[in-house]
Length: 213
Image 1 (tube, rainbow, N blue to C red):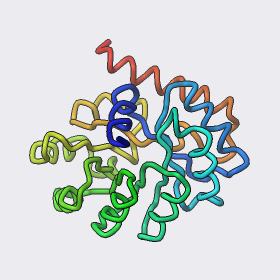
Image 2 (image 1 turned 90 degrees about the horizontal axis):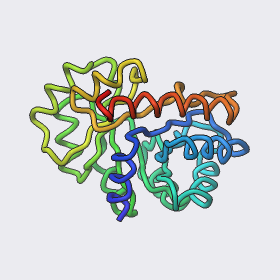
Image 3 (image 1 turned 135 degrees about the vertical axis):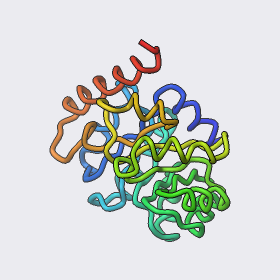
């Protein structure tokens, strides 16, 4: 089951790599740098150049070892195209029940964006189990902690926006189950070697926290 696989990856390394701006010509090498250094959940935002081509390349090559999907999924048509490319997750900056249901209908996992408890419960009622708190830096750790007090225990919230190695500990403490990380891992122009270094540093920071050291 896709959800079981996602949960396994999240338990191992709760990072979703956001490859905003990646191109099809580089995406496989960039993904290899991520996967080889411990990050196995990857999204290509649909406002990246030829994003569907990149997603299809990643799904074809890495779907057995990684969770591949799209970000900035804003329409039902987007969801259908991501599914056709072999995507497994569909991440959005907003909560739209119609899109959540379309994503589920295509056998993928929705990660709708939430900012308020109303957003969260609307997403949950539509079938979402993984929620993207965005922009997390605006609501802050205190806001997340308050929200977690009322959300069902089986719901996972990922903090995205304003989150990085320097403050992951405080987000863990507030109840975040994972994190979406963009430019700290990859930004347009980075080489695979740079991505590998970035990934290794972030993964070590997360493991340090997971060990409780």
